Length: 318
Image (tube, rainbow, N blue to C red; front, side, top):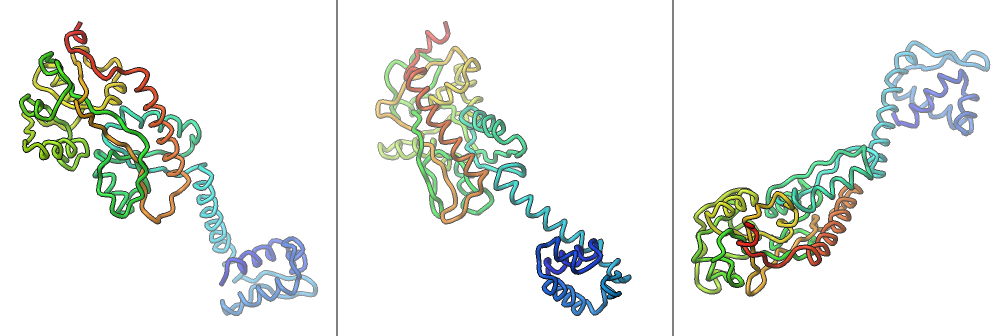
């Protein structure tokens, strides 16, 4: 039994004759009749009684009719669902993001995607870049944005933007000079991403820098969110680190008591677009990748123009 046979059967039933059905389908009448005969042979029943030049459907034909309609409707619905995905007229878009994407560039990416494709539902997944990389590698996610370094085994990685990491504190003594890892080791530290610790790309970088000079960075306070770390730093409980993009993204929500300085040997988070190596990326994921790249590029330009590399804590506090 084929979809073509079911289509020919239904058209014959509706037209009342093989000739009329063939004309509607733009077929030769013998070709249509042959397919209906093959369907009858497979089912082991007669679907149409031949009466003169016309036909009369049998009880078997009437029994088959709703099922044939259901099958063909299901096929059409499946086709339409795929076309809707291809043309971004429906369905879901799932994308991996690092934890601070809520500050940049996630909100802007989702806003623009929904403006362009209002019928596509969007789900951003992930708390940390290492988590996103694992999900993309395993096929749970098609693509995402991460901060480097990550384990790139099985992944296509395309760096897009560098964002400078600065030392942030409310204590002016912490910000008298450009920062060093050695100086950090002497400060009370408040660090984010406690669940991932050294799997987090930023903390991994500082661990490696500390190892090179033979020291260890031991935070006194560890929290999940960078906003909480910044809030504790504003209360004078220690120094923390953050990218300038996060400070820019917080805007007026950034505590005015905080200041920051760059590192003597600049430290950067590098943001990259990732997908599974050799895998085909859906139109929705391609669109999200393109929008993410555009927004990261825009943020890089804004940072160069709008946010100073250092700010004194005393001036910040007024």
